[in-house]
Length: 429
Image (cartoon, rainbow, N blue to C red; front, side, top):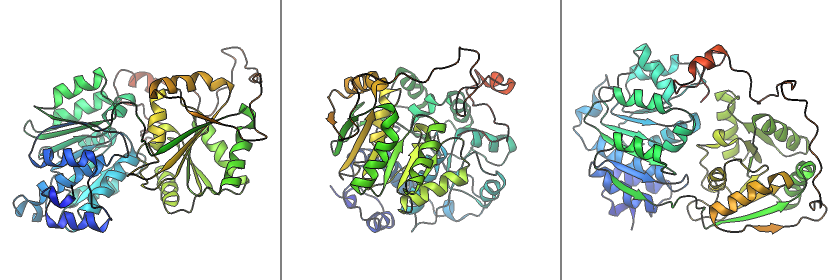
């Protein structure tokens, strides 16, 4: 099948061809006709399957094939709303809209927290056809009266599972309550838990179901390996791998914000151009780091799991798990950043004694034993080195990135479904 077989208008096919694509991915083959036909959609799809184009292409077609006066009037209220869990994903989706809609008179905008609201207000006043937003900042605009959701014709809930993980369920329900009753709904999720299915039941009307990413599977094009070593040898081992393997674009996962910063500094001192991204970084710093990484100016990007959502690089060759995630499913999300669009990728996990249980859980989840590799000089000791002694509970000094005592604002936010505001007034998204 080719994109020309899907019934998309010539302007969209031209933009797709300019990106070098000819054959739609499995989710695009199934989702595009369903969206074009006006059906609600419930799609199970991992990141990297082409799901973003799977909904942006038919949405652009539906908007542009309507009455011309809908696209030429000056004062526009949004006709499409795409709700995403993170800033990075909002930026990625809006870039996709602009890329594939470049030959169409359609305006788009991404709004998210962590940056000033006034430029967003100015852009909304100019008129927007497709609005991509994170939940909290969207509700900020609603509260200030700077956006009207009364004209939404198509609503997309992207990465619904991550939305629930991040505590946005109440915000999602508030947004849905503001939308017109008659609309098309599209829901995308990597997994469909009972909570997700309950949300889908209340949102979708006779949906078409698309399942192109069996739960908890990794791309067949990703080579997965484990290097067992000691905890205290990991940093030196990682620098050794960079020095001996000629790596040029590597996404490295750390478990904590503090750990990501420390690891990026270590790599920099070893002459490896690096940066860290996590929730405490400003939006400007995160956008700049992502841009430099995509452009090849950074050799390594060290990320936490939530910050990495939305990183979309077609030809990313390597993912390194410097530390294994606590949640086995997050391993699948991590390594899914490489091996995309049929290209080969490699995922290497550095595993110490403390993480053997995590590794066992991951292997049980993906139903395979991962290949073990030995790097001379960094072999794992027969016995684990004891962890540094910790002060008794209640006497520990709070670590950067560690759990802190709840503030009054955080206590008030508990149960509201919305993250508490930080001291600078920007919500963490």
